[in-house]
Length: 424
Image 1 (cartoon, rainbow, N blue to C red):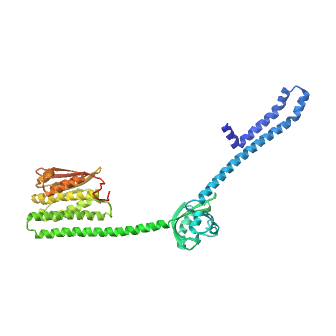
Image 2 (cartoon, rainbow, N blue to C red):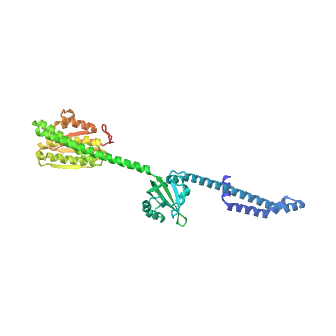
């Protein structure tokens, strides 16, 4: 039934055809049906006299039903349209952003209450104004090219910041979005603008930029002082070495100075990354190798060196222990092994495979017992190596033979947080 009613309501042609069919059947068969049903001639004559009136009454009833049904459909459509219009007006009026519609001549036709509240005008006052009356002249001039692109249909909308003038003469920063509506002939019918007051946002951004600038200055000063302090400590170790008479003491001071310079190199690598929490460990390792090689080149003599160092980014909390560990290993290799070799050779590899970092050092010469079993050694260097390996949660493997020795360090790359550290 619902389907039949929908067809009747929405298809006037079907109703017309049904009426024509009923009328044709009436004309063709009504007389025959009456004669077949009524045998009395006098009664038959009376019925035939009113037969036409019956048709008129039935036709009128059908027309009434059609008109009433049509009016019902129209009323329902009108009510839906009115409800939709009221909902749109409410949405337009109470939108959290200022909305206005204006002609291509920049005459305002319709504005909502938010738009009025932003500018301090009433709706009647705004409809008498143009955009140039409340937009800063310089900002209005800058947007002309964008307006032309909108009018030509080359751009659907644009968003720009504007300095908007209130009724009392004060200005605020607004984010203005503009689009154009075309008619059926593709001619500009009217334009729509949406205005949002972003003054507080701009003030907050300005305060944040100022605060960030102050913190950058402070951080640069901290880096400068750390760099100077590390250089001062290194110089003190060097001066103390000059006055030391015991060779063992000199060795300890030299090792300590190298560790301080290792930390200084890590610090320099970190500051070069523009305050990132990660450093390029491959770059740092190349600098460390060059520094140690330059320091001990006179003691070692001619050195054959091979390097394959891949760029590996490490979290600063891993880079520090990994850098110190590499310093300890290279220091022992250069000072204790290569200096005793007739044909000093060294190969250094750094690679990363599925977040596993592997460092290999192949070198000629002898090897101290501490590298074979650092956990059983009581030397300070062995303690440092064991502690740093534990901090990295890494594995140190050592292989010794007649020609070349191999030290392998493996650890899993992670964004671990160090003690009292805010870096992740």
